[in-house]
Length: 142
Image (cartoon, rainbow, N blue to C red; front, side, top):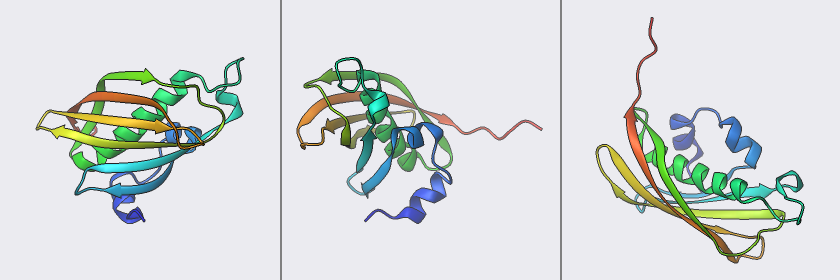
């Protein structure tokens, strides 16, 4: 079970985008720099063919990678996705969706990550690779 207090320390409240996608943290391993997240593939995410529109799937992978990058960066830096390349392997129908993400290389200013998305049958349906920049968190102007 992931350490919810550790996560709340970095992310005190869930983002509206995470909430709208149905984000549920299943596992987080900061030693291995991996995470597993469940999302809810809702009917309103579907296109006229009855499958989830690819942009929602990309958002789920980006959200998972971003959370893991944010956990690694802590409170002093804010990760921003610079590039996200996705391969769609099969259509995804509504229902439970899981994303597994890992950080591959972490530097002072950039990090690189990968993610796989699995449909409700547990079949890999998409995969992404991403690069993120680590921006210093600035104090609000007075």
